[in-house]
Amino acid sequence: MAVAVAVTTAATGLAGTAFAGPATGTGHTTSATAGASATSVVSAARAAAFAHASATGVSHGDELQAGDVMIDPEGARHVRFTRVHEGMPVLGGDLVVHLNEQLAYSGVTRAAGHTVKPAAATAAKLSAGQAEQKAATVAKGEAGTAELVVDARDGASALAYQVPVSGSDTAEAGGSRTVVIDAVTGKVRSNTPDNDEFLSPHLLDTLRERGEKLDPATGTGSQAAGLTAMSSAAAATRYPSTANGTGKSIFVGKVPLTTTRTARTTYLLKDPTRWGTETRDAKGQELESFSRGKKITTTNDVFGNGAVSNRNSAAADAQYGVTKTLDFYKKTFGRKGIKNNSKGAQAMVHFGKKVANAFWDSDCNCMLYGDGDGDMFKKPLVALDVTGHELTHGVVDATAKLVPTRVDRQGNQYGEPGALNESLADVFGSNVEFFTNNATDKPDYLIGEKMGLEQKFLRRLDHPSLDKLEGTIDYWSPQAYDAEVHAGSGVSSHAYYLLAEGSGRKTIGGVNYDSPTFDGSTVKGIGRTKATAIFYRALTRYMVSTTDFHDARVATLKAATDLYGANSTEYLTVDKAWAAVNVTPANTPAAHR
Image 1 (cartoon, one colour):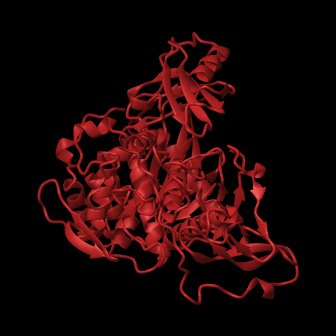
Image 2 (cartoon, rainbow, N blue to C red; image 1 turned 45 degrees about the vertical axis):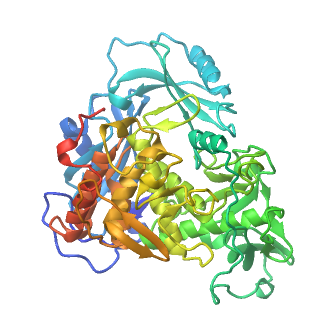
């Protein structure tokens, strides 16, 4: 059970509670205290959920299983629960119960705003075997064991089978999918890939239609002097030991890498200082099991030569990007690993044959990088912001679990929760660049600027609609509810940029930005550090699987209240930033759940 210690906070409790002035230090909790506290917090939160059933939606026959337990330095507690109804997992039934310092109930954030109990008379008309057969046909793969669930997503409360399908042929690189089949009607309720692709099927089709031949910009520079520690030759003679190696990467030039010395002249691309984070070689296979990847070793503690032809060059990029992403989350938020469980992240390069994509795979719990298709995309997708973006999907998967509302037959995803997921990946992926501050891959609010696209970037946070490839939007409208997730991501990405940097023209790090507003208003930003703290706190405390843009507005306002106070400039700017992308209380749509 992970206990997350929040970033510095300024408030005590949630909205409606008296707030103190801004705190000046970062809260810490000892592991022993945290463990004891977590047990009592979970018990109190579970009891509160049933005691306040009218608000939480918990009913007879429900069981609440705790995930994240978050104990904030100023005293608030938050417990994220998944729900089981009469032994069946409830899809879209997740909730976060909020408590004050005295463990008294102070609110709830819930995914399903309706009763999730299926009708008493409902009984499965399909057998598990029939559901498995249908799932295998739909996902074009090998079905696993069907499990009865309650599907409470999108306003439903249906008895259904959830079926894992491996080796699916419905996506570019195969992979696994999760298919949900209505147990009464046999209808396919959802068919969702288990990994998250950096490039959507729609975008890949668009690039092929345009005939673009992408030539990603590479780097030959190096990190600033002084970042590389003692040479590997001076390492201890007991093995395994920590060594200080070098990566000669494709995109960020020569960089320091912490490695593991396993023998006098053998060095493994595994970082013992970051919970054993490791990169392996998938050997051109579509592996979704990290243990089957080939360990990457050298005799001189130098990985790659900067050229694509050297298999270890891409591995150096991947390992560097993964470790820098882990460092960003730990040093900025105190988050220990992607799942906040003090475990390392994993990556595999050279995934599949001619795969022009990169993925976060929740089943593998690792990053998977293709080498490009050799035609449209000629280099591996191992750029720094790609890694930061995809690993953030892992963080979202470990917290709010934002999911698309639907997926089409080509694998394109739609809906505001999925768009918010993509947006957060862009926001924090961009922050990984700023945190890393690599001279060869200068930080910016652009995503995919290294890809070699004609429009010079894939997406951008200041003026999202300048992305013509995906048709990204600047402002919310009712059509956003079913927009393709990368296109829809512009709404919340734009709100974040306005919160951080403000509207109008601005030059940052040599990049010119010009951020418009829906209502012609002027927004003065509060700075990237505060904006990022607000969005992270909103994600981990106040977002659930069905959170849409209007919910995200409420979540970030609550986070700003916690951190800086309900009457603070930060709170007021959050409100202005969302209004500037046309997300307001006045146009909040009727709930879809």
